[in-house]
Image (cartoon, rainbow over all chains, first blue to last red; front, side):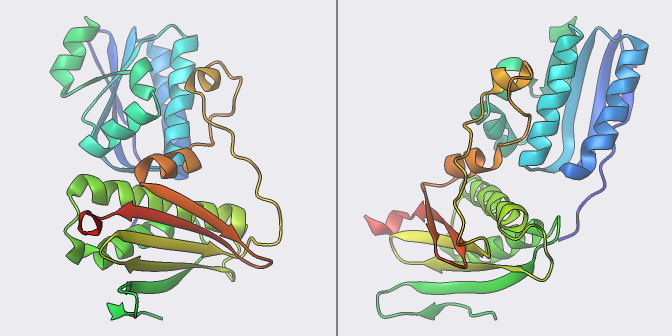
Length: 116
Length: 153
């Protein structure tokens, strides 16, 4: 089973940062997530949307990295929302209660509208 | 060693039996191989996804905590099914020492920096399968992941 290299390019839409997560969110994603959040901070985005649409695998270490990202955003008073999660990872976000702190939407437009 | 669908007297069938070296990332092989082994059982996609996550996390724990990621210490994985249940047995070389009590993850505490961000593995496993049984001897530590099957009523 081949792992997929993680990338997290960030784009901006109406003052909202959208992080397009791609690949596996495991221990190898730490630096990429850290760099991506740095660019969100430097642009002073008022909210952060996490796009999980191109993520195929998230393990417990990846959950911890998402928790760390959420903690940083909360310290910065920056709301975080998510979209593009598969049914399985949506269930895991519910079990871990991540979805209590990060509203989950089916697609980008719905998430952006909720952040407006 | 690989043994497919070998039956036993009590109706339990061995679907697969294999080892993996304890190397970061190799848990993905365990997930895919177990998924292939249970292919004929007709599990729903949701159940199969949960089983794969449980297998991945149990294998990662075995490699990291049981075998300290020593590549020369393999993790053994057995997949067995009866009419009543599917059992995936993950064994490492971490026997003979106490198993530390896992901290129950508390997301609010983690977000406040009062609990470390990690520590989700065991919690995920317990929530992905119907039962988790742990056994240990002087040499080995085994986690059994159990899914109840409809035919076992």
